[in-house]
Every structure is written in C-alpha cells, then in structure tokens.
Image (cartoon, rainbow over all chains, first blue to last red; front, top):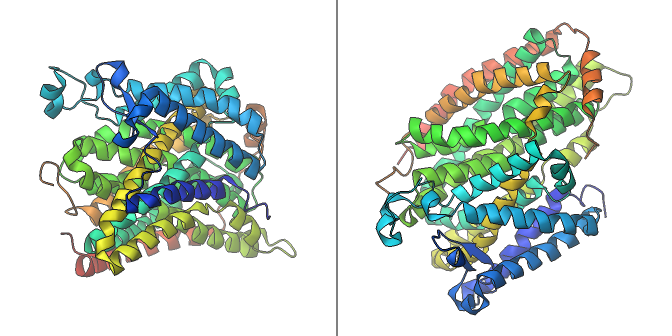
Length: 475
Length: 55
C-alpha cells in the first residue's frame, strides 16, 4: 500500500466510517453503540457516568467506561499497526491518557461547574459557574496544559498517544453524518451557509496570507523560506497549511515543523479566550461567532473544538440542540473549505517558487509532496456529509432515522473531542516561547494573529454571516 | 511527519537567516492577492445578498 495512504488522515477516516457503520443499524432500531460511556451533570459521582442508551443500563457506568476503553484501545492499537507505529507503545500511553482525559471530562460535569440556571431547581442547587457540559472539554484542555507545562517529561512520555489531529479528524467524519442529515432538513439555510463559508475563506485567504507574508518579510526580516510557511501557519490553517506550504516551496523540514509547534501553543490561547469574547461581543450573532472561530482559530482540532465550545455558550440547554448544530456546521464548513483551499494555494506558491523564485535547472512543481501533505481527511468529511445530505434531499422521510443513527455515533464524537482537547493541551508547552532564538518567530506570530488575523476574521465573518440563523433565546 | 528539531537546531537555523530583498514577483503576489481580495469582496457580497439571503 502506498505510504501516503497509511497515514493518520486515512486512519481517522476509517475510524469515523467504522463508528458510523456501527450506528447504521440504529436506523432499524438496533442499538450497537449504546454501551458507550456517556457523562452527565452530577452531584453524586456515582451518577456521573452511564451507558449512552437505557437499553444497556445493566452494564452500569463503570462497565460502560471499561467497554468504551476496551473498544477504543483495540481499534486505535490496530490503527497504529496500520500507520506503522508501535501498538504496544501506544497502548500503554493511551490507557493513561484515556484515564486522565476521562477524569477531566467527568470533573467538568460537576453540578456547580456545569449546570445552567434553568436546571438549578431540578438539580437542587442555588449556584453554579454555569459553564455547561462543554466545561468537560475545557477541563480536559486544562488538564493537558498542566501536564505539558509542569510535568513536561510525563507529557513527552504521553506524546505517542496524544494524537489530537487523529482524534478530531475522526470526530469530524462522524459530525459529517449528523450535519448532512440536518442540512437536508434545512437545505435552503445550508446552501447559504456553504456559500457564505466559501466566500468568507476566499476573502480571508487572500487578505490574511498577503499581509502576514509582507509583515514577516518586510518588518521582521524573515527569508522567503521562513515567511511563506509562517504566513500560511498564522493566517490560514496552522499545522496543515504550514506543512503543505513548506512542501510546496521545498523549505527545509525544520521550518514548517517549528512553525507548527508555535501554532499549537497559540491555538490553546485562542481556545481559552475567544469563546467567551465571542459570546460577549456577538450576543445576537451566533453564526458570526461560529464562522469567526473557523477563521480565527488555527488547526482543525482547535478550531472545530472551539466552535463546539462556543456553540455551547450560546445555546446551553437541550432546547438549543438544533441551533448548536447550525453553529458547528458553520465552523466545520469554514474549516473544511480552508483545508481544501490549502491545496489550491500550495499549488500557486509551488508554481511561483519553481518557475520564478528558485529557477533551478529542471525545477518542477512538487505535486507529489503537496499531495502527500494535503489534509486528505476532508474528502471523508465531504463524503459522509454529501451522502447523508443527498439521501435526505432525495427521500425526506429518511432524515429522522438518519438523525437517530447519527445520534448514536455522536457519543463517540464527544469521546474523540475529549481526547482532542486533552491532547492539544498536552502539546502546548509555553516554555518553548522563551527558548533561545524563538522570540522573533513568536513575536511575528503574536503581532499578526492578535493584531490583525483575529480582527479581520471577525470583520469577514460579520460581513458574510450577520443576520443568519438562530438567535439565543429565540430558536 | 518529519522529526521535530531541537530548540538549538531551530535557533541555529533562525540565526543563519539572511536578509533577502522583496523580489518583484513577491510584491506582485502580495499586491495581487490583496487587490483580488478587495475586488472579490464586492462580488461575493452581492452574490450572497442576491442568491443566499439571510433568513
């Protein structure tokens, strides 16, 4: 099998497809995923965890956790064999990572942390931080961050299992099915979101990249080899863009890899700051907020996780499920279009570098390198989204059963989110910012991201998404 | 994935970055990108408002 096939991208797609396949019998009423562990808001720790479906209640909470862990351990270890990693090395570390991430997730559901005011009476409490169920993800992120920054040797040991991109990409494939079904249910609004998302990223790409490249070259004195991956990393889609751009201009490996490590650190800062800022600044414009998260937060994992976090802040209750889905659809659409556009931009840069800038004898466009580094999981998302969307449009009666099936798979989407948040925190060692020689790199990143990219992203999101979709308290 | 460089390797690589003047093609890339962005903004906003109105 070709080497570019045996990657985390392919594995994520297979994982997502596998979970969705197990959820399909749910359409006919057979529940094959109901044993997976689900966490709810708790006052008594014994009541925090239960099987996702009532039909599996006899399994109990601890049994559901054990079954979930065993399932994930088995499929992910097999996945490690598929991508050529050591399953034994992964398995030991995954066991520890799963235990820690799951504990953080449960901690974030503590009643005085997560409960919203409308639940106070039924839960018998008078106060809570009101951080919603999404606090579990935040706790997982903070848990990873604490380990990365205070016990870095332990974080380094866990690194083999901290595969945030794998986990989030599997989650994105799973999300594709439920969003596709939802999109078919509201095809007019979905077409608007898709086009507006495409328009927003075309604008963002053209403005962000040129500006950041100019700043890096002109004001910070970076060479072309550093400035191009830096511009792609800061302005577009973090890790994927930096690595694909590095391949397109034939930069040395040190360049995109170093840029990527900065991307992860700053995406954590964005994850913590931007959702509450969006909730405050855009109280009546949740779709602007959702698009903003897609345009401003770098890397797939951080952006889509932050989109989900933000959706939870805008619509915390069970009655807000549909509105939350619309927000997640918007963030995901923006991010997937960005990923697709990376390929287009990389080809443009590759042609310019090969034909005009480098002009070495026999220089050609590195098509193969670009393809190998392109984030190919987006095809998996497009497939699950497209198939469910098409089926729903062709046969509206199928939408409800498809949503029910996707709901069963959603329990694994949440689990992959937890693993993603924890792994992102684990990879974000802020001490690296003070490492010798990295100051200038970090400075250009901070200046462009917080001085330009975030605010231009907000402006573009506003232009294309204001007045669209649900309003908190109204739908 | 390429092996992650050490901080020392990165610092060394960064310290050896030499100043390179902006080439005309880079200026064209920057200007072309920004101008295209400005021109497309109007077009895309018009298409959005006309064919994909907010509901």
